[in-house]
Every structure is written in structure tokens, then in C-alpha cells.
Length: 299
Length: 299
Image 1 (tube, rainbow over the protein chains, first blue to last red):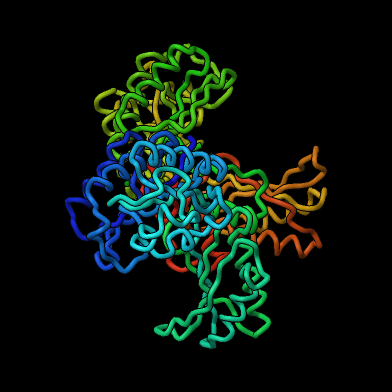
Image 2: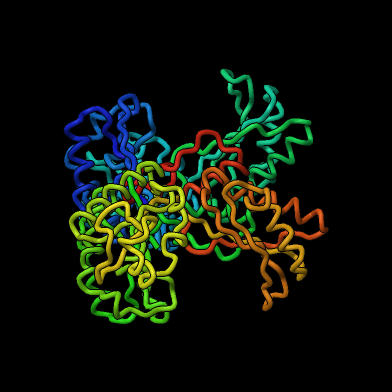
């Protein structure tokens, strides 16, 4: 079954009635399954992760955005997290038998519908960006709700991809497509932060390392060790095992061993299958040989 | 969600009407999901694999056995595969958040119900066996339907664990519990069958090797290689990676490399997670971090 994940963020993290109402718009669409839903009062932000067949995902994202526009007044909104809209971001992510290209198509359809039917300015971002500078969400959201509102209609670079070139109380929404993020950290058998930073630099794309790795070196004080903390932004093209083995080789150079690793949050089954394939040299292993993967009709 | 797998085999592989009727008894129980269903005309046998919450699995296994007893007359049955009953075997297998011990309990409950309500002699086997000699299905089924029928009521060793000490036209049923079998084969970079046989002997339990490994050496003629073909009868206690690494070390001793491996059929997600844990040295990775595993409510 073709499935996409959608990770919309809404600018309400305090009012439980409003939070429940937005969540209900997603749950009430047949076929959706919410995997994660967390409201943060300091950020005053609701972070939802749901999975659904393509059409259900489009509908649920649209319905929740419509509801958020009804309930949230950005002129009243305060929160630590950067934000520009009642529905701030709506990224679509390929999960089972769907591609990033399909998610780009979904983002453009849903973004257009939001702009036209909800009268909300929509910026396409990441893989769905129509304008290269909009690949980067931070650039789109620079100035946040208040700053963007002041410039829209005057500053051409602020013209949205869909919807009106002005802000209503619902603000603007970034709709996009991206690969699943895998938050993968590798722990080193040393407390020397310099080594973690050097290894992070060598493994990350910006430092000349692997194409789809973002990495930083951190101290884990309570364990008296250091960690290479990473986001793998395309685990298919830069798989976990390749990152792990590279870090192990780099660490060995400093006489340091890798003492462990951790995956933070959710990970697609593919990422585990890739690693098992690699280490066990599996030939032609198919994801639908995994019993749990068959249960939901995910094949 | 607690789930068990059940792999009943029925003595009908030709009559599609009867096959569909038996299958329907499983599908019609709320919560069941059939993963595999294959009728073999030569064996004249139906092989079904389904997954369900515990109560649904008990009900579906009972209903299908009842239906098979109505539709199949063992006095008329011929087939290459050894068999003793219309419903020949009903093994329960722990999958998600269930233990082998729970499956033993399920087997005893379902077996008792079959014996009392369906008047079918039931032998408890494998992990559910009440009599040690009945751990082995082949010993229970020795003589098959005709031979067992002739001895029941006379030969005390044939007395079933539940139900009458005589055969009706539905024959007898073996109900049991076992771990999921993982069919795991490792391919060697040589065509020397002696080496595959030596390695198989060294890795398997009967040869002094790993506790839960059954292994044999085979030729793969079309690829001009040899293979160590295995059943891992408890992948939790003897995990795939340990078997793989042991074979790799044994092969190196003969100057032979491992060129690949294969998993035949279904494998529990746990088995992949175990291998990823081991090779990536993952700390505290939970199966419910796998997106696909969350979709069916399996957590």
C-alpha cells in the first residue's frame, strides 16, 4: 500500500480545546493514523506526525489547516519557536512505496488548494520549492509572521507560490516535501570534544563528507563521553551503516572506539533493512518479508 | 498490541470450494489477517499463516478446525505429505509482545476446546507437549491417519491429550506452540560441498554448535556455489548475526568467503532489529520506533 507521512506544525501549544479540534480534523479522515502528537506550551506549537494513503493525507492536511485558520489568530500568537502561520509547515514525506517526487506533487496540489480555497499565502519549500532560495525553510520564514506580513505586497521576494500576496490572521504556510529524517547519534569512548567535532566535520556534507549527513560534536556530560550527533536527510542515498562505518574508521585514527549509537524518534523500516542487508550480505531481501510490515497491508 | 501468528495446515489441497470455506472461517473472525495461504494439490494440503490478537487467533483456529471436520473425510484423503487429520497441525507462534509461554497456554486452551466440543483427538506438541516424546511432531504422526486410527484405544502411547481415544473421519489434530522459524541460508564462495557440510556441522546444535540452529550443506548448481542452509528455531536466543559471523569465521579457516545470505519467507521485525542493534551498537532502540511497526497499532 502506498503511504505518505505528513508532519504538520500548528501555532497552538496551550489551548487544549483548539489542539483537540485540530487533531480531530486529521483523525476524522478515514485511513489516517497519528503516530506522534505533542503540544509545547513554551513554543506555543503543536507538532503532529501522521501516516495515511495519499488521498487521505492530502485531505487531512487540508482539513487541519482550514481548522487552524479558524481557531488561531497570529496577531495574538507568542512563542519561542520561529513561526509564520496558524499552520506553520506541512511537509509530506515518502514512507511505503512512495517516492520523494510523488510527495512533491502532493505538496503542490495541497498548497494550491490551500491558497485558492483558504485564501492563505503558501510557500513551497524543500524538495517542492519552485524557487531555489525557498528550499530552505529558515529563509522563507525569516522575519516570522510580523516581518513577513509587513513586507508582503511590497517586497517581490515575498510573493507566495499560491494564494494572496498578503497576510490574514492565519498567516502563511510552508508546504513541502522531504525525505524522512533519521536522527542518528554515535557515541565515542572519549570525553575529548575536539575529536567529536573533528569527526563530525569529516563525515558531514558541508565538511567534504557524505552527501546527506548533517553532523555536530557534543559532550554527553552525565556519561563523560562525546557524541557525533547527526541528521541523515536521505537515508536511502547515505545509509546508516555507511555513516557508522566511516565514523568508526575516523575514530580509530584517534585511537578512539565507538561505544554505541542511538536512533532518536522514528525510523523507516527500510533503514533497518538496508543495514541488515549490508552486514548480513542479504540477497534480494524484500521488506514485505517482515511480518509486522504485512499487518497493515503495507506491502 | 499483543499478537500471535497461527500456521494451521488442513488436509485439502484440491477442492477450491472447501479451501475457500476453511479460509473464510479464519477471515471472518474480527482482527485476523491472513499473511499466506497456499493449497498444494500433490500434497492435497492447505497451508495458512495468519496473525491476530490472542482471542481472535483462538477463535479463528477453532472455527477453521470445526469447518475442516465438517468438510474433510480422512478415509477418502490421499496426499504425499504426512497427515493424520482434517486439520493436521495448529501451531501458535509468538510475534508481537507475546511469549512462547503464552502460546503454550493458548495451545492448551484451544486443544482442550477442540477435544471436548468437536470430539477430535488432540495431541499437544513442540513447546506445548505435555509428554516429552510428543515434542516431536513426526513421532506423534508416525503411521499417519490410517496407522494411528488402527492403534488408538489399544496402544496407550496413542492416547491423546484431549478428546476421544478413537479416530473419527476428521482424524486427529496436533496443537502446539513454537517460536517463529527463520529460514536463513548463507552462500559460500566455493563449489566444494565438503566445506559447506563441515561448516553446517560445526554451526548446528546436533554437531556441537549453536543451540537453536539446524543446518545442512547444499550445492547451488546453477550458481556453482555451495550453501549452508539453516532453520533458526529460536532467533531470539540464537540471533542471525551470531550465526552469520560464526559461519564467516569457519569459512575463513578454509580460505573461503561468504558471498551472501538469504532469508526465505517471513521474518519477525525483531530479528532485523537484533542485527541492526548488534552491528550499529544501538543503545535502547525500541521496535516501536519503526514507522511501519506503528501503523497497525503494533507497539
